[in-house]
Amino acid sequence: MDIRNLGRSGLRVSAVGLGCNNFGQRTDLETSRKVIHKAIDLGITLFDTADIYAGMGGSETVLGEVLGDRRKDIVLATKYAKPMSTDGTKQGASRRYIFNAVEASLKRLKTDYIDLYQQHEFDDRTPIEETLRALDDLVRQGKVRYIGHSNFPAWRIAEAEFTARQMGVTPFVSSQDEYSLVVRGIEKDLLPAAQQYNLGLLPFFPLANGLLTGKYKPGTEPPADSRFAKAPALRERSATPRNEAIAVKLDTFARERGHTLLELAFSWLAARPQVSSVIAGATRVEQIEQNVKAASWKLSAEEMAEIDGITL
Image (cartoon, rainbow, N blue to C red; front, side, top):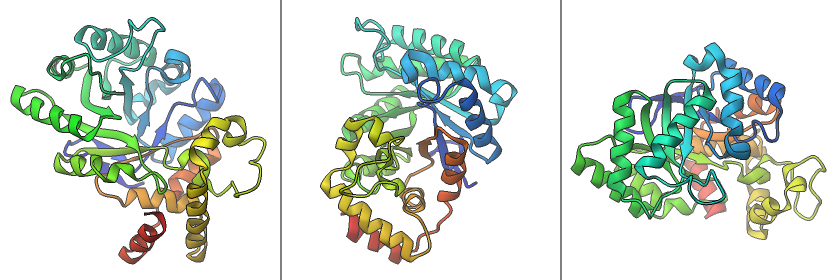
C-alpha cells in the first residue's frame, strides 16, 4: 500500500482509505468487524467516518466497538457540523457546538483523541475566527491531532487559510470533496485552491455511487442486490446519459489495457494532484481486497491525456 503525507502535514495516510458510512447501517456489527480488520490487514490506515453516519452516531459506535487495540494502528478521521438533531440545536461550527460534538464522538469511538477532525460543511452563521480558535484549542488539549474540512467552496478555503495565518492558529490540512472520472467540477476552483495551500485532497464517491464499478450496463436494469436497485435516487443522480456514455468508453479503455473500470477509477484519482487518499466504502471483505488492488495501476502521461479526452 502506498503511504502519503496528508497535504503539507506530517500525517501519513494510505493511498486508499476506508469510508465508514456503511457501518451500523448497511452492514451489521459482525460484517463490519470483518471489513474493518481486513482493511487494516491489507494496509489501509485511513478510516473516515462522521457523527451523522448510520443514524446519528451509528458508524462511530461500531468503530468504537470493533477497533480495540488496533485503534493505534490507524488514522481515525471523523466529522462534525451537519445536523445531529431535528430542531437545529445540534449542528454547525460554533465554539459551543464543536466542544460538545467532539466529546460525543470521542465517547462513541472509545478513544481519547481524533487524528483528523473535519468540518462536514461550511457554517455561514459562525465566524470562521470562532471556529478556528475552538479547533486550535482542541489541538492544544490533545483531543484532536489535525483538522480538515469537507464541501467548502474554494473562496471559503482561501478565507480559512488567510484567517488561520493572521490568528496564528492551527490551519486546515485537508479537503474532502466529491471527485471522480465523471464528476470533475472541483478542478475549476477547488483543486487549484488545494494546490495553492497544499491541502491533502480526500475524494469521496470515487466510483460515482457504483457507476464506475463496471457492473451496470446502459439500457439494462441494475442487479437486484446492487446499490442502484436499492437506491433509485442514487441511480438517477449518477447514471445520467452523459455519465453512462463516459463509463462505457472508460470501460473499453481499461479493458484494452488489461484492467477493469474499477481499477481505472481508483488509479486515476490516485494520480491526480493533491490526492492523499481515495475514500471508498465497503460492505464485504471482497470489496476491500478489490479496492486495495485497484489503485496499483500506474497510468502514463499519454494515458492520462487520453482519459481527459474521454471525460472532459
